[in-house]
Length: 129
Image (cartoon, rainbow, N blue to C red; front, side):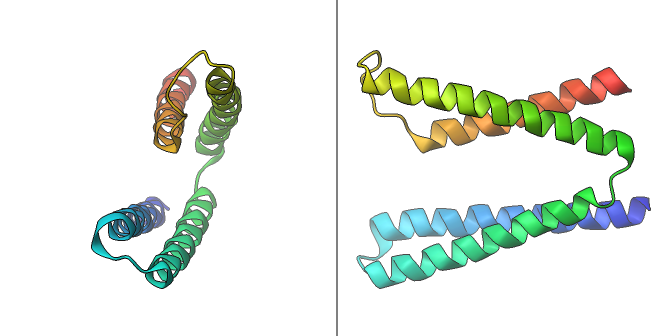
């Protein structure tokens, strides 16, 4: 069972690197390498397809988690979702109401999601073990 879990973790890692890579190429390419809406659309479709592959790989990994691992990750996902909704709406409202001057950037919210999830998994792992 551990071998299957390792294999699926590697597969998820590969899909994640591919998704980040295609997104980086899309972002840099559309801003600096090409001036073609068609190429940008093709890149977006490729990035979207790789993203779907990453989601499926993540789901497949969950199929091999034991009950405790599922609980740890499910609680981390629930907390991350809640925090993201609250912080994201507050962030947007802060700009709309003039509290902050710089327009909210998606990158900051994505970093917040990643950090929230990682910290939640670490804290839950420590709590349950």
